[in-house]
Length: 340
Ligand code: ADP
Ligand code: MG
Image 1 (cartoon, rainbow, N blue to C red):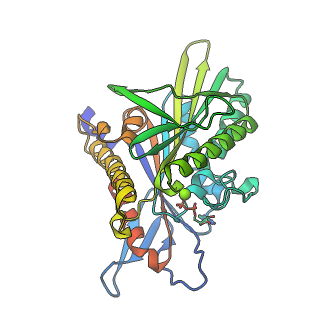
Image 2 (image 1 turned 90 degrees about the vertical axis):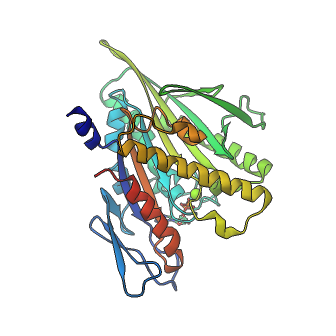
Image 3 (image 1 turned 180 degrees about the horizontal axis):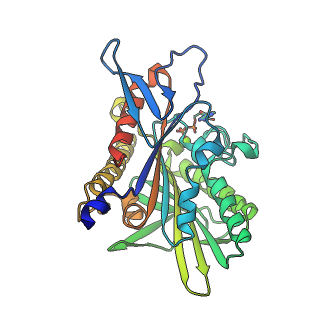
């Protein structure tokens, strides 16, 4: 039946990336072999737990290897479908490295580090790919970039209206069915990768100013880059959107003993990550109602996750034994996201 064939259609692919260890002394808990990750079973001596996914990348994997899994989504964008890549994982697991390394630097906390082009993450590679594709096939396309931050369930525009503006613009999100409108969002036309990099730098500066104003670390908010591609062909005209998301850290916020402002922050992070999980579950079960409205992040994704959109979850894990619990939680999230 149509229902069952649709049920099997994979709208979300799951990729797990276990980063190399950054400690000379830590014991390693997560190991990778072909498309399987193995960890010691938490709270069980001498027992292990193995997880299989569509793709698993270990410490040897390059940024190019990871990007090769994104290319299929980019082809979909040029076919008129929306696409999403989101990175999930605890703080320090490699989300920013995977998504935004290069201008963001090797460390999310140190944007001044300059990496070589071969270290560039998914965002830069996607932008390069888009412009190469347009040129190779002589496509009549216009590309726009938007940069958003989602903090405490509020959406902020990271492109200032004028060069001098340091003000934060809170945006209103409206949805009608599967159509989403972000009122007042800046969409900057982009003509080439160099222009994109300039905009990205502006957005990062804005994010860091915003972080100072709101007293928030970048690992506590979601960061989203949206590339809109408008294609004018002889037969048809289409507009599609690529959303690239570096999610807030998924570590169990209850352990941090946070109060007040930080507690509020934790509550919103938990709720938004749970909302993503619920949307994916509903999609997997082919539910007629998908709970996009439970959170701003899922509301923003209602036209880009599920339906005709193609999505990739990049679940990042740290291999060290001291990170076993968050790693276990991330692998469980990844497992829940897997369509069989
Ligand atoms: P997150 O964004 O999840 O908090 P980061 O991307 O900032 O984590 O990664 C934490 C640290 O580990 C950074 O110093 C980063 O450069 C390093 N790192 C992450 N992934 C890799 C990788 N695949 N190869 C080399 N270094 C990595
Ligand atoms: Mg980060």
